[in-house]
Length: 413
Image (cartoon, rainbow, N blue to C red; front, side, top):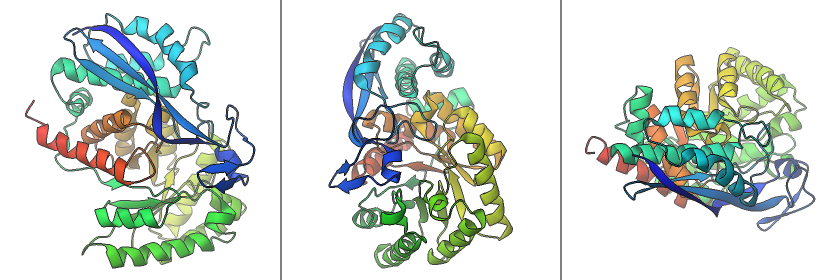
């Protein structure tokens, strides 16, 4: 089946673009705004409305295939592509991508996605923004699935030699800054991992000696015992955005000691700490996480470190996995560009015995979130993020319900 036409529309995402550097440097929260000057190139404010672009392919049978271009909340940080502005990239897609899509016969998702993911923008000589590649690959996957009259999950499984999961992928739910009220919601709905917590500032959220986070973990354990159903033992997964390194001066022994204290506060629940340090570059980040991982293992800790910053591309994922820089890697779907790279990254982590967390961002859309569910059900990461948004309920509903539909429909089409 051929693509006969295409349109793209500018849209909104489920959250915001936030200037991570400015927040770490002390931008003051004021309701849903941040007061202060932006510190990352491209930002006009510390917090800006999230933007997306929908790519809609019109097939020769009249059906539609949709993919959404979206970028992460903390764009421009940790080695990521710059701020994604719909008004800039809509014209680029129409000029350079659409001419190569129109008239294209659908004959394989993987090959087509790899082609568009690797192509160079003639105007710059560089690959297109990760958000563009992300949306194009989703649209191609949807078109291929429609052409074959199959689920997107089935297409991915067929092309990567896997089978579609018969059980749901465990879900990691995030609270955002409403880390108490939203934690209650997550516990009531029984998500397998919580709370993320958005611990992105030492003074306000971590504490200069880590005491604020320690007390929060104690509260979580108590709340889970009070509200959770019998036998509910979720993973505690907390993203600290490098603030442990800031608070403890990147002293790896001091950070390790603190993590062991935090493990005690977790009361026997598995504890994952994402982004304990941010060393400002990929090689330094790998060295630091490798050292911290080894230190925890030597001390027989059950704390699992999760790599995030500077672990952006498929090549980065391979480098971190080969170096054992963390017990688990976040595969942050928009940062990898083509969604085909998410499948490749998860399978690589599995081969290397490294945990695979199929993440992403609150700053995605319903379309990109559902496409990610199909990839997850085909290649089976250890856990996947409930997204988009920071309200929990909406993102969890989208991810959970799409998994149920896939399991019910697989084999019937």
